[in-house]
View 1: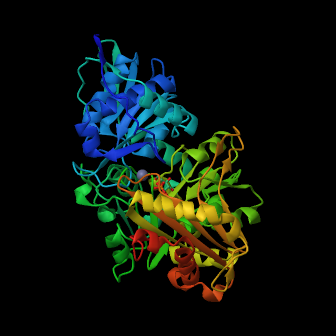
View 2 (view 1 turned 90 degrees about the vertical axis):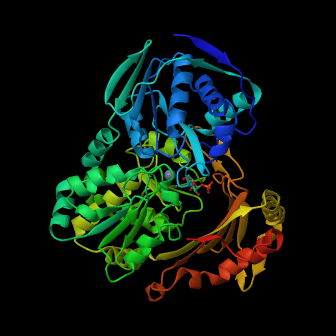
View 3 (view 1 turned 120 degrees about the horizontal axis):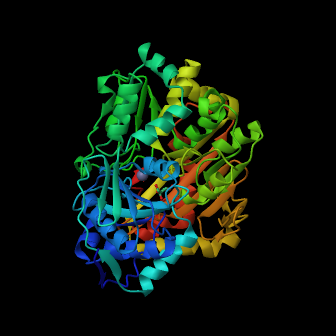
Length: 543
Ligand code: G1P
Ligand code: ZN
């Protein structure tokens, strides 16, 4: 095998964000050695030795080229065993599952998650460690350092076997094995959920629609919902993974999955609706005439976990990202289990999961998961809901309103301002940060700000500290506003404002969150001077 030293970099823009290195496709395509340089940095830092390592992605444009490049650089760096999903496909949670199940040294996951794909869209690469989870900050920082300071990468000139034929191939001393991207994952789901019980629910006439958004979950959803559980032929829509996701934004939320939302609020609504994103880690849950907010969904799964095979023995604890609503805290309190508050991004849950401190965790951004893998998991969340519905014989709306009645309702909304001028967005945050000491005790309208701070996280397992994780304004125990800049956007800056209010009074439960939260929304705009400083008049996306 011939190994060549290629020149590249250094690049000072390869700091992995909330979930890996994510850029416009053109950055990868037009900058010679850009992807290879990043892979070299990972391999120098991550200590994967001879492997095995996993490679797979959501099938978006540039997936194939990236896989070839990763293979050559990995072989050039002495990796001797590489496992690849058939046709280069693996959902993010399935990749995590495979790394764990097969005891691999780590893996490269190729995706830009919910961001659009195609030549004009986004591409991303992320490294997951041997626990199946996204590399922790200590590793991503070291990758960034190497990438920004050193030049070059090593590349072996080896041919790539056909990626559509299952099984191992030996290529100049490197074993490349193509695996079925579904097998390990479907087996894991079957071990956690009662497939027979869910099948009888569908046999009794229960109906569902799953929107795969032309992305990677299509084949998983058809294999599980249609073929194993008998949910019917039309139960998965937009099921073929397309390189450009058919031009849509593969993000399961009220804005980008509006067709499904419309269906669920129409006369033709099935009993259950769900969607996942580009790489299969997000989920949106709907019932007939009802949308389940992700924060509520986490709380409801926690409260009903005892009904589900894989979780029957109880939950060690739960965790939510800081901006996620405190609905799950109310459940943890009643169950008498710990509830952790972590910064945004799945990697912060992984230490807690690895050390058995939590069983379930989630984020307001349509991400829910458990200790079964080290990523959030869209199909898993859908199965969890189906299992609860099958075990209780109740509908989604019924489950949600019973939950609010028992625990109180936390009204919640997130307003996103996308594509902002980064300087203006930084000015908004800096302004708030500077005024933090004087904000505590100040009033906004008739409401008093009782506390104001910037969230920092002290990891209870390794003691690492993450600062600057969002500005919080508290209005007593019940209401809260959080300001945060996105770490995943690829164009300009995105400001996220998270607003919540706990309401124990069931009489208010049917109200629209935007209405209930209106005074807090107004306070958020006023206090941050957001519109003034950015020239915007309103958010781009409201969830
Ligand atoms: C967003 C979400 C965050 C999630 C991440 C990856 O990150 O807010 O919860 O973990 O995508 O899916 P952000 O753009 O806010 O940094
Ligand atoms: Zn995703």
